[in-house]
Image 1 (cartoon, rainbow, N blue to C red):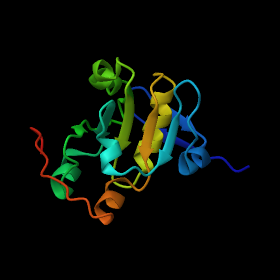
Image 2: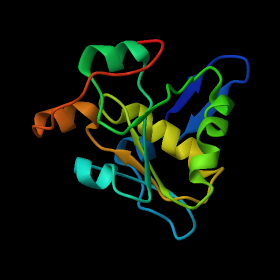
Image 3: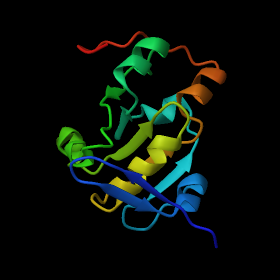
Length: 146
């Protein structure tokens, strides 16, 4: 099987293997794990779910965001800074739903986080593009860096 490795350089290089798994996603595992699939916005924002938009502030400004989403850019150069920003919200065991522009970045992040937390993680297939194509109206981003 042909496998690629992605290297995100920075202070602590993050190496994630198995690009094939990232492209295809994974089925959820019994303890934690992650899956890559499209969810309706009503499921992304349901009670007991934390929706995090990991895109950049410029992307939030350009397209808008899903109402109720936490806007936390994932820094691929410093990936260990992400989990502390959401850990308190996940402490009760809620599901984590990650969204980006197309679903590619969220697959990498879901794989990274699945090794650190027991929560169910969903990487939204198709990302914000698919949400918009489905007719959902985004709201303007409200963040200090937008």
